[in-house]
Image (cartoon, rainbow, N blue to C red; front, side, top):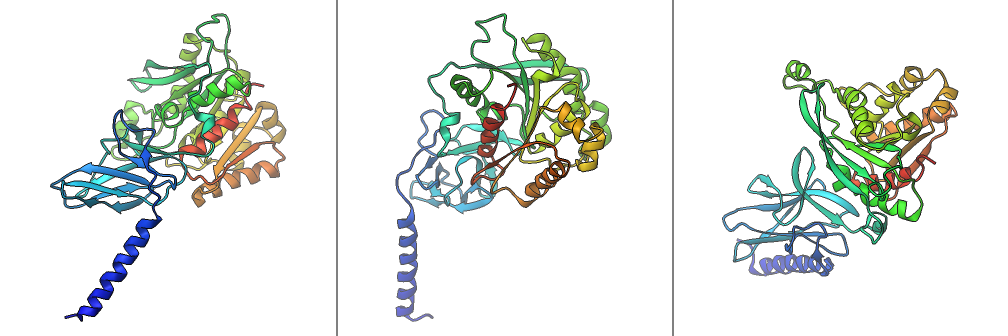
Length: 386
């Protein structure tokens, strides 16, 4: 048995540490900007901590799972669990609650499609949030565009941003940006998590970007026979075929586009960066601008994108690259994982050795996350169609 004095000392020290840790938390929590209507929790404070609350009186253990770390919550006598995370980076984050081993969305937050499922998301206010803020400027529209794909034998959809004035000046035609999401996300990402429409509204209002149409499609597209052959493995993607042979013709037919390569750009984030690089290399007659946000990294089933593939696969030499592409834009967050630095920097080295002009943007203090990609779109859009 431990000496009573020792127990008292241990208790005093533990209480002191707990009290000290509690004093470090700034108690200026406010409801998140992406809460469901009328919901008080989750909350965010000025340090970037996320505080959550959920009623689960019969649960034995509840945790907040965010940023790859799980934080234990504490239950009060009413059966309500409460707790907070360590400070998080600025920007948007997916998160979930873990209740007795089951991962579930937070009933207080809005839901977003990411990590392969609909789940919770939260905004840590960014110091530069004004560029994607909802402001008193003319706004464009985001419409849901349904179409049947003969290639995949499925109904598919894309979301289409049309700029302010599109429905007023019926004679005007517009250039188009095809903008792709990342792995385990879908066509909702860029207009929901990414705020692409608000970024363009603000840029167009300030005169820093040309009015343009943005098409946001689903990068997962498979032929029925390929799905059957693959079984439990990842099937060969048919997205390039769907985009070139179905999406672009349908968009040009339905919207007032300027249907030529000089007025058509493509970009994507992460997996979408890899997909769009392959697409532009094989279809230079369709695009003249390329944007790769967070990577030309290769994903399972993708073609390897190295120097030989890039130069010999689509171009005859470096001069040919610059003749056919008006711009190559690459970007990374300064806190990205090493694999993304490796692949993007290898690609940059290849471009520099060949004296091929490109634009590189580094997003300060962000990792593989939506604030990196919002900032990348903000930079990229200003360089298009000038």
